[in-house]
Structures are given as structure tokens and as C-alpha cells.
Length: 103
Image (cartoon, rainbow, N blue to C red):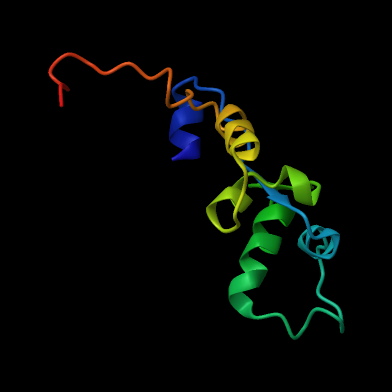
């Protein structure tokens, strides 16, 4: 799909995988396996292969900056508003209903 969109003239940027664990970021950027990483299951090696092929990019972020934490951990309203902003969502109070969406 990426090749098709590129051929059609669309500028496609690499997806970025954000991770708070610096060890995982380091492992994903290594081209070769070593004795310390042989035990990691094959399905987890997929991300490493994609990073090495430069199909995706891995970046370390701080624990407080993990946007997806709002889906798995209790967060206050301030954190939820920050997540909405980071994901480019509109504030639920600002969303206007379309015509015919009367309830």
C-alpha cells in the first residue's frame, strides 16, 4: 500500500512506535540477535525486523508521555485532555452534532 500511495504522489512518513522501555528500543534497533535476545519470542522479533528494514521507527518517550496509558491506567481529567490534544481529537465539549443527529 505504501508503494502504491508513493507512486500516486502521496508523501508517506514512517510510522513511529513510541516506547517507554529503553531496553526494548535498543533491542529493536539491533540488526543481529545475540545471546541476550535469543529467548525473545519470534512474534516480538517482527518489530525489530521492521525497524532494521526502516519500515517503522522506534523512539523512546518518558512514562508520563505515553498516550496509550489512558486506555489501561486510571488518569485524571487533565491527562485525558492532554491525550485528546496529542491525538488531535476535538474536545468532546466542542464537537458539534451534525444535522439529523438529534437525540
